[in-house]
Amino acid sequence: VKLIAPSIRSIGQYAFRSCSNLTAVQIGTGVSNMDIDAFASCGKIASVRWDAVSHSDFSNGPFRDAASSLITASVGSSVSILPDKLFGSCDKIRMIRWEIPDYDDFTSADEAPFYESRGSVLSMIFESGVLHIPAYFCTGYRKLDYLSIPSSLQSIGYGAFANCYSLTSVILTDHVTYIGNTAFYGCSGLTSVTIPKSVTSIGSSAFSRCSGLTRIKVESGNSVYDSREYCNAIIETATNTLISGCKNTIIPNSVTDIGSYAFEYCSGLTSITIGNSVTKIGYDAFRGCTGLTSVTIPGSVTSIGDEAFYGCSGLTSITIPNSVTKIGYAAFRGSTGLTRIDAYPNPAKVSMGSDVFYNVPKDGTLHVLPKYLSAYQNAIQWKDFFNIRGDLGGVILGDVNGDDNVDITDVVAIANFVMGSESDNFVEANADMNGDNSIDVTDVVSLANQVMGL
Image (cartoon, rainbow, N blue to C red):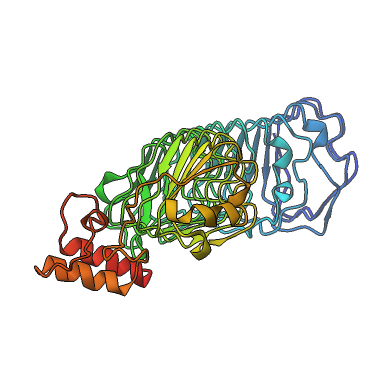
């Protein structure tokens, strides 16, 4: 074992050349310069601890000659600046210990000091006192299966553990307040996640492409998020937006928005029931859900976001209700198994992004209301389907006065009905907004919210 004293500022070329029995090295706090071959031919170094506070110059890969033997690497709490490629070529490292409390984020994964070890690291230990895990710190650590997070931790940076495929468990302590965008993106080995009550910010796609997730829970007492009705999802409480779900999610009736990336690449999702309270499906909400076979979009939904069902290759049918007024760019692009579409809206009143049905088979059937058959046959994008049939029934949820529109006059009509004053042209089939086989004040509220865009 060799300890480099704090008073040493520079380690010269070949300083420890051919020290064949050297197995462990500790770099002192004062070292600011190290020549490229300082540890040349030291092929038995198994452990390095780095305590150098800062540096003026280090040649790339100062431990490259220990690449085949270095198993454990530690970075001390005193470090303020890390050299680029500090452990470059050391692709056999199995364990990393990290003590820096609040290191600045890395701007990309290849700037992280252990980037070239991402295929070998099995264990990552963040020691007591660590407050922040830097962005991109463990991106792509394919074999990482043990993660130790201290009670001191407060935040997890952007993409910190993205694509750590072997990671099966993450225990977040009750001091964590922030989880960055894509923090655990692509961690397909994760089966469950519990969000502590301390968390106040979760970035987009934080748990996207975690295809093995079967359980998501927010601890009771969290002021920003919840998992109401044990729904296996993360819901933003103030906006009633479901921001992250899994293959076992049941969407509560109180949810009004399915957020962007909510189920992105959830390949285990085979079916989903979208409640009548949902008004918006966000962009990329179901992107890449290849196991999804059928979706009925309820009559409360007015907007389907960009690429919402992009790449849902297992999707065979879809129902688009009359309430929809906007379908975003490439909303169903790449849904190559989609052979039946039931479309109820007047196409002239639906704002369409480009490439909505790109790579969707055009020899499937597009079923529409008879009165809109000609309109669909001439509408851009819709007219590309070869088999357009005007054979749908006339139920248009919310159109309770039968004028083919859903507006404030329908709210008045359903309110009058509930109060016992039914008009001659009242269409009961269109008035049961929540599907409970009863027309009451809850349907009045649901329709009023739909009309107001709430």
